[in-house]
Length: 536
Image (cartoon, rainbow, N blue to C red; front, side):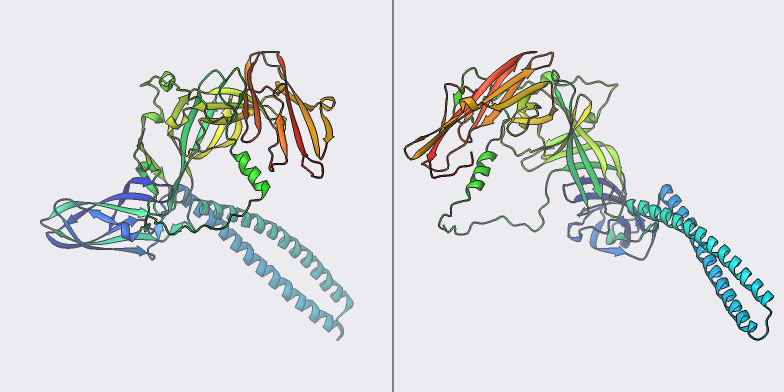
């Protein structure tokens, strides 16, 4: 039996391709060799074997050995197993003592009953009293010992339970795993030689998950985005000092390109208005638009693209201070992105996640203070990253840290069509926004068969910081779902920077100086039949 070793592993979101090597001394002519150490979960159809020295593989067979126990090669696991065996021994001793105690109690009880019967046949009362006193004393003492042993047994069981959980966490049961992938080869060698075998195959029991650490030290410095990967595998074998590659490819086994079938039109059914409104709100996908000195009454779809000079923020290389960027090579083609890691990694086969740092990028960001008081009274700090598609990000969760404080978790949608990547960094109570309805400027009247109502809201924004900030204040006015409902935004008093008429959202974007207070108004009217009820 020849033992093989994992040399390389290309891990996909689901599954991995392994490359293993083995050496074998061959005699001239036909040889049968058995190579062990392969994953028992190997996809048999994906196995490929390469040889050296002109050796030809005439046939091969993959089998799984269930009979040979593979002892763990971990001192920590062996230590846990020995401790578990010792605790089991102590527990068995307590069980044996319990059996002896209960047997002694049963024998004594039988003896007492006989003495009681004997008293009826002339046993003295004094002897009977002594027998009962001894029985009482022995019973109390035995019950106390049983109680103490029960407490010890519970402690032992708790310890053994924790040790078994630890073993299960390490991916082993009772310190052994008894499955091993075996490759049986029939080969023909032109001469006596030491042949090198390279075995490539696919396993489904491995995966990697991307995530990011987003760190913002201050609003006058670039945002640092560090890509990371959580790697796990339960292939039944350990990967020791392996060259890793992480790929976004999705191996397609047995898939066929789709074809169109006939498209039969059906009568249109009107959607629920509430669902339509929900979809309409979903089109509002930007926190802020481009800065402008004049109000814009249109759908804000043509924000100018800001070309960021990323090279200006690139850190200078230092030979003395190497980072993971020096060991990770990122390549991409039309189908996927691959991260090749030059450092050897060891990934245990017990399924425990290993975190691997990939690349760190520093990018400029526009920091804004955002308020949508109708939805939330808090003022949020946002970092907006332009040209973020140049970062080659993958859709994944991201942990956000602002000023060395963990803010929370967000999600980076790499398939988003937004021109800027917006990250929420938390809230700032030093910026206050007050939204109030001015009742004396809101009125209602009846004109013929219609009711007209006017609504006036006032926003008071104040900066209590020591530095100026870029501010974004948003609110909304209703949209008409029927022709007999008329809604008008009173432009004389409502002067936003942007008015997204598609969803009825107005935005005020401005610089707010330290200690400065600004006031804005949103005024709109609604006219509708007086016999209609609206959710105003």
